Amino acid sequence: MSAAPPIPIPGAGGVVLDGLGRVLLVRYRSGAWAFPKGHVEPGETLEQTAVREVAEETGVTARILAPLPGTRYTNDRGETRVISWFAMRAVGEAPTTLEATFTGGGFFAHGEAAALLSYPEDRRLLEAALASAPHPS
Image 1: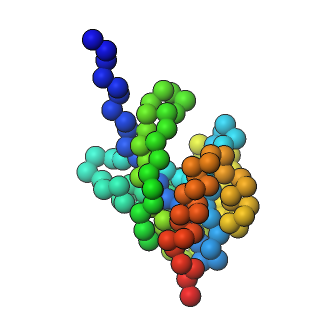
Image 2: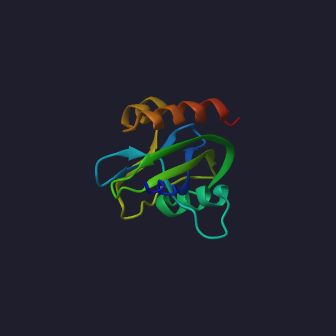
């Protein structure tokens, strides 16, 4: 008998825009640029996870605007991850205070963010977030 495939580990994250429409990115030690995301804690909704992870990883408080398409990948530990994504808007001034996991990060103009992002699916998420999150008046 073949073993059943492992159950994917859920997570959630945010494509966060600030009041100027810039995009929040983080840079991992591997050099990869991506959006903040993380594991779902017991009792949390996916929306709560996205808000918490953005705040923990970057120091930015953000609110959810709209759901985005999910992504699925296998990480460097061989774990299959399924991430629920949300378009988000930073609340107030948005200084970044990065977790030690990251070697860089902050808010970037759309074009620069798209060029920095390491994964094609993240560039698609950025486009979806920009389409679903009108610029604040």
